[in-house]
Image 1 (tube, rainbow, N blue to C red):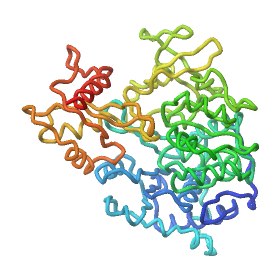
Image 2: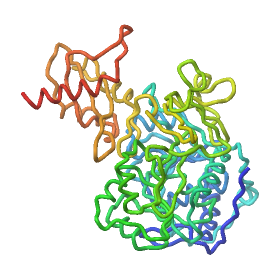
Image 3: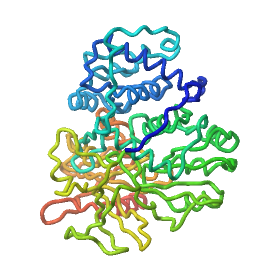
Length: 498
């Protein structure tokens, strides 16, 4: 099992526009947090829940949960009331720390304002641990669950719950460190949401490395360009393609000579972005991974001085001791340069979804069926042809077309609908819908969008809606999804010419 050395208390842990904090501050916060949980009679067999936007306090709380061996779940602040309350039933958190403005969205008897954990307050109090807290022993065994994460529900429209174990994070951090990691007292830029493994893994890897995080509440291109170009304390950043594109649009965006890498994930990567990074000498690490593998499980090495690699479309090689197989339609090993389904196995791979029969996701030998498709070249470099089923990744957010379709089909004038992603220069993909109405009555796109906003987060609402007479289907009445983009473009063209 990978082992990491503990940071010194005076080492830098977190920076933001609100100031700097050390690992000593984190240690003090952990005492406060632990006693707080005991004071509120938290059931330690249940996870702690968080429903709050990015803040220094939230990062401290997530870090404290990891160090104290307390499982947690961080919910999407953009989710609707219906979505959140359904997730509460599934995960059953003990206490939920929620932003006051979001508390009206939820119905949970043990909800606490996250301001109760405010850093100014928690770091100023001289905590005296009670008997129970003083005798608390952290449960930090490798196979203990550290957190629960929701997938996008790519095949059923219902998000699945991924319990992630500490061993997964330990192996993921060790593997990533072989490629790059910030030095102590240097920053990993964090501007990702804190309900995805992408953002949370930055916190946990930094804890294991003993390095520092610099938190930005939201993506701010001008400020980030200044940090990465001029401030030598910044050595790493995690971005999705949309963010990287906006940075590259700036003529003043470069990186300083001690900058180690941008870790790129969260959706399809345009090779033009990679070429532009190479031309600017920006070290870039496109990777392959998912929630079930605790983020990246394959990545390219950083090559100096250009900071890129070849071939451009590859996502690199799998992290040892994990393994990837490419299987054909007969479940046999596919030949080199032949596309097949991706199966994975190893200590980074989760053990199964919560509250589901996992027989359909694992074979008898413990290999996980990802639902993604790709191939290996002769050098064992992995190439991704398509990601899980018909998942849409827009601006780094995952959207299940099946979830959006179910909402569309509930509208009184909609007979049936199909949802898919179309390429978009700004967001990577955008959500689009093809709709068949009852009695052929014309649609009102604006009205449909407003109706969907009552039950869907904004990024899930289709940006484009086209009306058709029928959907393309197989003989067994299944929608032929591969024909939807072409159908959409044909209808959009006809609409533009009318």
